[in-house]
Image (cartoon, rainbow, N blue to C red; front, side):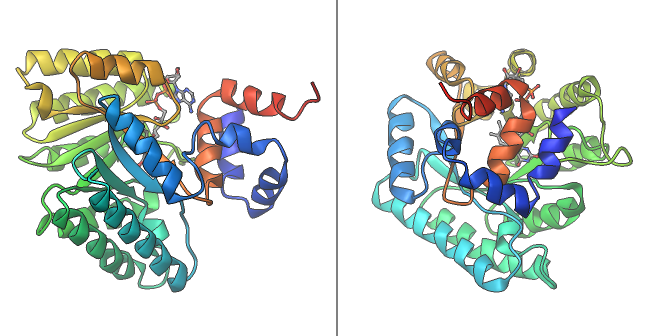
Length: 307
Ligand code: FDA
C-alpha cells in the first residue's frame, strides 16, 4: 500500500522540500547515493573496481523543465567521462542517463535529448566506454527506444533498458535481442496504470522470467538488473543451458543494495556491475528506493525518532 504513495511523493515538490530539509535524511540517503559531487563518486568507482566490480555511473537528475538545465546535465556527463578517461577508469565504468534530464519532456524534447545524449555517446566511444539509457515512465518508452536505435547506428554498444512490468516489453525484447545489443532488464520502478502494466508483483516476476528467456535465447548481451535471488538463479541457469560464456552477459545491482551478494557473484567469476548514482538531485531516486522496500522506509523513519 505504501509503495504507490511513496512513488507519488517522488514527484511532489512539496514533499521534496520537507524531506530534504529534515536533518536526519542525509545519513539514510548516503546508503544509496555515492556523494553530492564527482570526486567522492570516483573514489567509490575506484574501490568497487579494486574489488573486481564494474560500474555504471548516474549523474542524478530527472524531469528538467528548461533547456539550460538540460544542457547542464549534458555538460556534467561530459565532465564525468573526461574524469573517467583521466583516471583510466573507462574500462571499468560506463554511464547511465535519464533522458528526462536531457530535456525529453520539453517541447521538441525528443530532438533536444537526442542531440545532448549523442555528444555524451561520442565521448564515451572515444574513451572506450558505453552509455545506457535508463527507462522512465511508460509515456517515454517509444521516444527512448527510438533514441537507442539512432545512437546505435554510430555507437552500437549503447545500452537499452526494458521493464518487465510493462505489457509491451516481451515484444520490445524480441526486437532488441539481436547481435551486439546490450539490454538491461529490470522489473520497473514507476507508478504505472493498469492499462499498460502488471500491478501484481507475482505477474511482474513471471514477466521478468519470460523476458529473461527471450534475451538469453537471443544474440544480444543481457544485463540482469535485479537483486532478486530467484531471478539471478534463473539467469544463471539460462546461461548454462544456452552455453553462454561468462563474458556474454552480466548482472547489475544498485549501489548500497545486497553488497555482499554483489561481491560474491564477482568472486564466482560473474560479471557484476554496480549502478552508482551521485549528485545533489537525489530526491526522486531515493524515494523510489524507499518505495521498493518497506524495511528501507522503517529505517528512514527510525532516523527521525529521538534516541
Ligand atoms: P524486488 O523488488 O522483488 O526485490 C528483490 C529483493 O532485492 C528484495 O527482497 C530485497 O532483498 C532486495 N531489494 C530490492 N530493492 C531493494 C531496495 N530498494 N532496498 C533494499 N533491498 C532491496 N527501474 C526503472 O524503472 N528504470 C531503470 O532504468 C532502472 N534501472 C535499474 C538499474 C539497475 C542496475 C537496477 C538493479 C535496477 C534498476 N531499476 C530501474 C529499478 C528496478 O526497476 C526495480 O525497481 C528494483 O531493482 C527492485 O527490483 P528487484 O528486481 O531488485 O526485485
